[in-house]
Image (cartoon, rainbow, N blue to C red; front, side):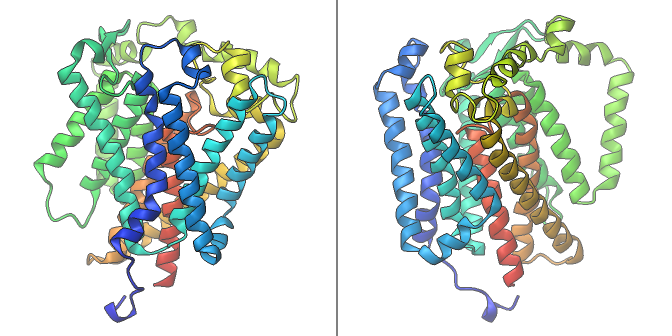
Length: 434
């Protein structure tokens, strides 16, 4: 697009203001680091400093988003009219209503407020659909991801006795966060997302050169991913990498990687791979997804007692089924939503999820056409790289959520996914307007 026809750019301050509510929610995610060592039940039930800070940050994000949306009423209303955002908002409203009959009303209502804050933060981002804002918002999201990854690496070096915990697998230890208390599965997800982002940078057809630092970053991300022993995150990375090669049309590389993968599996490394995947578990425990299927079976029975309205968002899983102990979720997104909000809430949630996935996929396909049809690098291709990269990152989060509750509740995974949906809508708006 000629420079004279480019839409006016936003000021850096305005872009930062619109991205701030999302960033505040990420910070709020890790306030539990301040209550390390407390009794799990007291950390949940009492208004300690960590919980107060979390409430303050989420409330600040919610207020900030609301003010911005009120000041930009017309664009905010248009941004709201996205099926994904509307669906998730109705899901949050359903969760709030479920607080009236939940065993722990405040907990259910507060989890609904956290969801609403996350969605409003995404709507705030979409309310200024410009190329500069897309780039800024993406830099904030990816920057958060790398900060978390750096904290895991630094913790492993400075506090190895806390970072490496015993494991029954082929490796005697698995890696967790030591500076921020991040469990091994979440460490695996963070490492997988960093590896996917780095791999996308390597596949970028418009890169000037392949930097050694990029290859080293990919290498260290894969090492962290393996040390975390997170199997679903490893699968997510593998599927996302295949998706990237298809979107960038790197068929030779895809065939080469497939041949290498099959060769490793059948030519002497079969036992090693099986031992890594089994992670020291018995066959029954492995096939039950580390005991998750037994928990899901109990949850299903509980769901049938109130199938239409559920038993309370988040409250049903954490307190009714898990007794309020250290485990806070049912480790299954679909189960968590169904038990908490019933068929009513599940309907809103699944519509929102599908709409979000469609938006991300649509943006990536548009980006693929722009990249493949234009050999010379342009600003449109720069943001097209972001759209393709986000599609792969969302794929990994989706796979991880099959054995976690990331997309059912306010979490880093949900914040990332809703940010990718927002960026997909911004991308499509920018491309169509140009």
